[in-house]
Length: 489
Image (cartoon, rainbow, N blue to C red; front, top):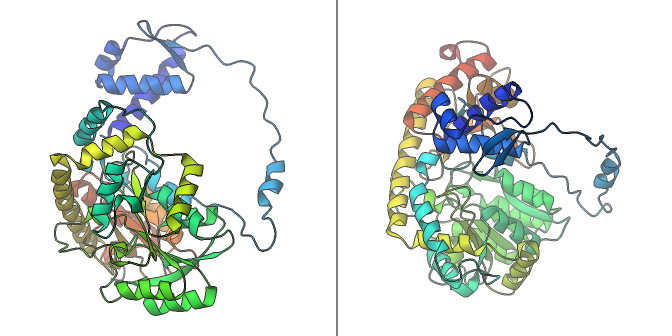
């Protein structure tokens, strides 16, 4: 059982028991709760802290936890209807309304209910995270001289130099800014490169978080289709001509959600087309450290082969470590770097120094290379397990590309006479005990067909994958109205 699940379960039990105590009465000690619920002291402590945060109990150091006094004098709800008028104002016909749909992002961030198999997660399962190495790195970082002081606004020089070496030999620390993860870097890049109301070219399908960032900045995403070799250059050139866009956002390596790798002959074409359009390419290199052990040599980032500053590179440590290690980098050459720096300073000043110091300690330790080797093998094993289970149990699911990196599969739903209702499939899956991500949020225009995204990085291992696919088989039969064996393959 996940720790977060056991904490939630214990908190619910304690919440249900509160009526047995009068306001101000002391609750049983932590030792008693440990024995009664057979939970760890850490779980008990976290459950009590959760109730304290809800205002249901009060903790007193050295004395224990007590039922809180009931709240009195609640303020009646006000009238917030005026906000609908204010928020709907778009500043004129030339400005895009800044309505933001974060549902696609929240689907990968929300923790599912207890017992639900998490095929919709966007981060590594806790068993894949280097928790011991992270804890040791954070402890060492906290002892560094000046660890709690103010860092340079652009980031620690040593960490910037490390990212520069990782991206390519042509870059130096002076070309890199440290950011609070990849999402923050994307937001900074789009705000720096495009004016509100402007079009921005995006891969189709693409990462919903990037679409949300673009729309929040008042930009208009324009789709450019991808195939198993990445974005199609002829369509990219046509999109630049048709829209006058000055930015193209792409994921050349293990694209999310398709897993595609931009083909070798397309890589220089993409940069050339953008350069001729006077445009920037924002390269989101999020999955380089999620490579599988059977991938073979990886292509270098586009930024490593770009002397003219066309490519603005985004990368992060978050995906390969923990959702809470929000340390990433923006790399660029030329005047654009100063604009990127200015926007980041205005937004957040700087990334907290202890987090940067911890990242330095982590990537400089022997544990880092060991973790990456282990992660590569484990992700490859999970991908193989999910691919095999889907082909056995759900042969009608289309798997156009089996990735050699990343953490998910992009699956097409069957094209039956009645069609396949994507949202109905997602709902039926959840009823069957497995959470999956619908494909619709990955498109900024009408999708060509129905898809779902299935994560194998967010689950415990092959056994949980097998169980999740079994539940998905049940959901499929529910939606399509018949036994799976009778459905078209």
